[in-house]
Picture 1 (tube, one colour):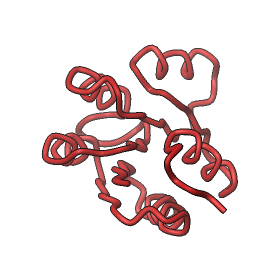
Picture 2 (cartoon, rainbow, N blue to C red; picture 1 turned 180 degrees about the horizontal axis):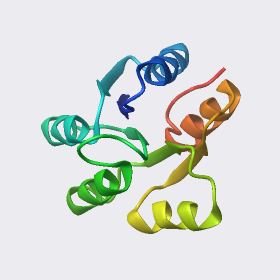
Picture 3 (cartoon, helix red, strand yellow; picture 1 turned 120 degrees about the vertical axis):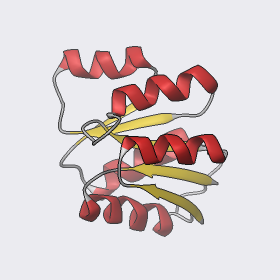
Length: 123
């Protein structure tokens, strides 16, 4: 399994990466902003993309739109403080397949990852 994590906050990116590693995901690519994430996405194939909404250079919604232009299959999960129904609908309309509001519990992240990576065996 290959997962791309796009999150500009280093501590949160580290938490997501550690959670993924703990679930057995061996190939994790980290991006500190949307432009870097887009470059990584173009250079490799991923089974899941986890993206923050508010990032420098390219925000999460625009990243999702870029991803959807080239790949309609890969699950894209938004992780953000934006929790209003309108914002959730905006993310889903852009092509996000799942949504997780900050702050979140590790168990919530694990459940969303399991839902979006069904081949992953979570204990």
